[in-house]
Length: 391
Ligand code: NZQ
Ligand code: ZN
Image (cartoon, rainbow, N blue to C red):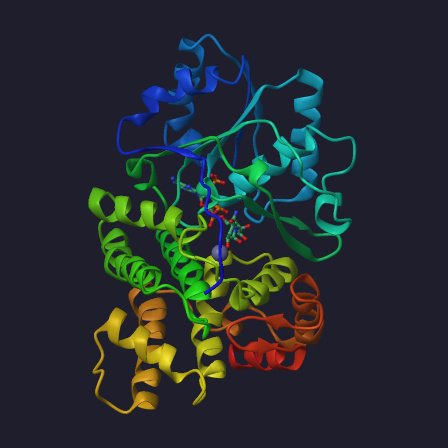
């Protein structure tokens, strides 16, 4: 068990009606607000009008960066940074999901430097400071509302890269589950798969960790498995949406790591799929996860699968460990494909093996250099094998 530091200075307003605190919270940081949002869902749902009202009531001045893409592009970050510099923006307000929040994080950081935003990702330019960021979360998925990192894409180079720094942590996040009632079924399912994957990436580690954290992660996974189908069947079920939303934040805000630090295998492989094919992040993870589990199962790793199968799915602890492990993988696949209704293969998404070798190399390069050093060390040929299992 490694020593660790845990610090999470994001203030969260959770629950229905909390947006009434938006104006005063923004005003703490200054007068000029850059509102960043996606493709228009916030206008269709009426959230945009509510925000404008709150901001105006607080006497603040509003500027806008609309049109952030799912898998946000570096070009949009550049546009936002320029607005911040031209207008002297004091605080960035991200309204949306992981894409909008991630884009806003790097808008906020790029506003404080003279170099291009992409240098944070490929030239090792450090993120040392950023404008204050406030978020209003509209979809339970990535946890970007309460973590210190973000992922930005550069379609010209087929790159989708992650970097993080405490300076990027939102200062305040608003999490009102009713704002997620309008999330389409496909995005609800993909977001839920993403939350589950964030936990699995940390949980599946053979190094000894804290029992308390393993039990916490099992609770998070059971929460997603229990409530995602409810949210799909009843989009306006408050309890289901609230549980998914809070699970989204706690899956990836650093708490569950407790000194664990292996590379995230499915995320390494998925980011390449998104970079090359612009697919939905959580869906890519849903396709990869059961195959990755299958590929990594061995006499050496079986005990972790048994722990997962018994504590999350209630499988029989006294049965043969390999049998339990396989059942645990089947139950995971059943949840992702049958309960969430996500298509189960890359072929379903129109992806063939053309770029597997290149994507495998890039995944390794983006993580440990020559491999993805995760639950089980994956070299490029292992990653190609896992991609092939997904066809
Ligand atoms: O763009 P709009 O019109 O708002 O529509 C969005 C988008 O089309 C829609 N949506 C969101 N809230 C809605 C809604 N539609 C109706 N009602 C609502 N309330 O959902 C679509 C997807 O939104 P997006 O923000 O792309 O989804 P998500 O939150 O899953 O974010 C995905 C991005 O985050 C990155 C992913 O790689 C991907 O780029 N990640 C960020 C992480 C982080 N910062 O820590 C970690 C993750 O592992 C992940 O990599
Ligand atoms: Zn993710």
